[in-house]
Amino acid sequence: MRTSRAALAALVLAGSSVFVSAAPALADTQASLPVTGFGDIAVDGVHDRIFISDPVEGKIIATDYRGTVVGEVPGLTGVNGLALSADSSRLYTSLWMSHAIVAVDTSTITQAARYPLGDEVYPGKVTPVGGKLWFGYMSGDDGNFGSLDLGDGSVYLYAGAEAHQYSGDPTVYASAALPGKIVVAEGWTKTDDDVKVFDVSSGTASLELHAARLTYWEVPGSALTPDGSRLVRVSTGGSWQYRTGDLSTAVTYPGLTRANAVDVAADGRIAISVANKATGDDIYVFQGDETVASQTIRTPEPPSADVPGLGEPSKDGIQERGIAWEPGGSRLFAVGMYNRAYRLWVYNEPASTPDPTPTPTPTPVPSLTPDLTLNRNGWVVGNGTTVTFTAKLGSPAANRVVEIWADPSGADQPNRLLKKATVDSAGLLSTSFRLTRNTNVTAKFAGDDKYVARSVSSVVWTKAAVSTAVSKHYTTGKIGATKYAYFHQKTTPQFTTTMTAYPGRKQKLTVQYYSKGAWRNWSTSFVTVNTSGKSYAKFTGAHPLNGRFRVLAAYLKGTSGDSANYTNYSPWQYFTFKK
Image 1 (tube, rainbow, N blue to C red):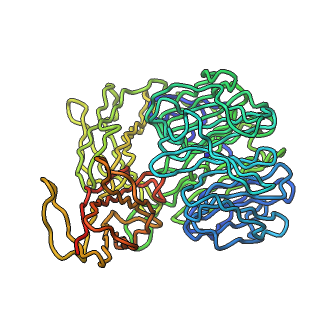
Image 2: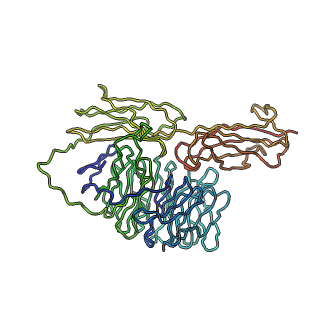
Image 3: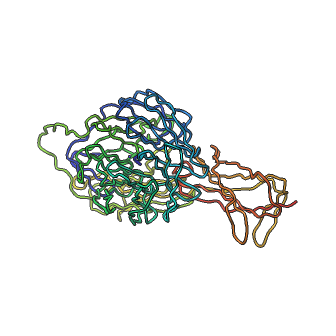
């Protein structure tokens, strides 16, 4: 599936202008959703239903096209990405921690089948291709992809030279217009092979094309065009169309930074949502190769009052992968958070152009773009680090006021104004913020009679705090220069991991043993971190006398149940067994 402030004349986002040809459209219908988290959205055009996954409560809800709930599938711990079969008779989803894929009967809204994938396979999003389901997955520290045969339940894991070279579980895309082919793309483009095309006509995968790009951007969404000729890819740093025939860049969208969702309609219209959680998001509708939006769709403005009892502004916004077109129809659906609650917005005719309202003498529109910069973009810092951010307004605008906002990752953390003030004589404004999560910091200039409004953003990655301790040992000592915990052979070691807490977070615990001059993996497992940031595990089984072991805990962004922090590892803790 899709990994989804307007102005009448122009919108400026992160320093680039996106011009639209019509006034912004507002939602025709909206409804509250009984979910506490959002994973993905899928629209069933046969039964006129919308399916929405909730990874926090572990369920899928089904609504009609107005947002009224008509069914629910519970008991799906870790549910996330959704995909419909070609005839919409089945909805497929993966269960990360259960190492399985589940099929839902879309007519009865009940679980129809569950397919195990193997204990070492942590599956991501799924894509139906013929009688198979292709999926990305994690195994250990590496990402790869494979397929499930829906006929006999057999599992195929790609084993070519490119296997296990992904930094996370990749996403597989397919189209009936590309028979026998799949496109495999990273969700985080920090490697130099983030998009590949494979021939799967034989039932196994053979690499045909790959694109070498090094961007260090998070890519929350991609979608194939109906004819299969283009892959539309949106990211926090830019948005593009790639030709699937050679993976060259066909279209670059100016100004669409902080894009968080994309979907392509059956008639080729492309909808891209752009995150702006301080003021409400916008969705831009493009026609084919056009880089000028034919329509801007505005989500509701945030409430003017602070959240009761918190003294903080509400945090709104369309969710990642949160937009979807009606199959073969004109409706566009969007899932967003509004005043700390999830809502479904329905736009019945987003391609239409409203009748212009006659106006008297036109007011001059500012046309100059101000110089505005913000430092610290791409920094990686330790948890709890206080970072100073400095914005610089370089243009001689009459308005010299700049705002600096901080938007930490996670729905429970509001976007907050850090500072609003007039810049100094050098055009500078600085403020500091203590970072505990990945944070998007934005500098904003409201504009004046000559200069248009502008905002620029910097993303600072914040490592999760991770430490591991061993207990139940009777003493400590050194083997060589390394400190070891000594256990009696019949004692069961206990490991306590302390990690930055976050809802649904899991830590990856790795135990290795020393053999033939090298450390080798003994076991790996994902263990839940509780609300206090603690995680407990035991090293059971037979313990070899004088065997040398070590244990390490890790938080892996996107793999440990969330992406609120940056990947980090604890130091190794060493232990051995004596009589």
